[in-house]
Amino acid sequence: MASPTVAANAYASLAKMMGSSAAAGKPPEGDGPSFSAVLKDALGSVMESGRKSDAQTVAMASGKANLMDVVTAVADTDVAVSTLVSVRDRVIQSYEDIMRMPI
Image (cartoon, rainbow, N blue to C red; front, side):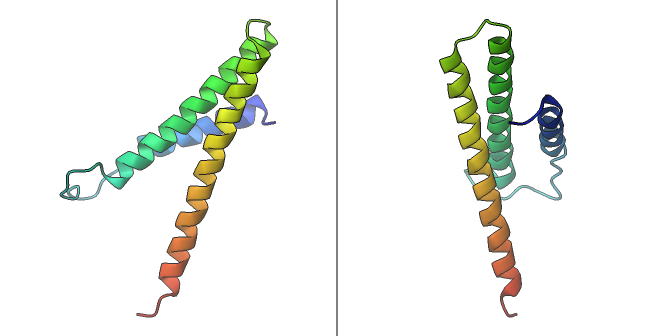
């Protein structure tokens, strides 16, 4: 399990990534949300899930939370982070495939 310092550093990194979304030029024309907006929402939901998990863990340590709530919050965070890592791996694999394409 991650220590509080590791978790705080991870949250700070995600917050920095979300805050520094600079758009060069005009956004694409279309009715749907932009890729950066979808990515920002996904990162925000992972961060929120982590915060809830940490809050439940602290509440459990102080005797104010139910063990089942803590386990559920930690499991939700684990699923969110695993999904985010899978998407990241797929994006990197796609980028590498594109870079290997002949011009």
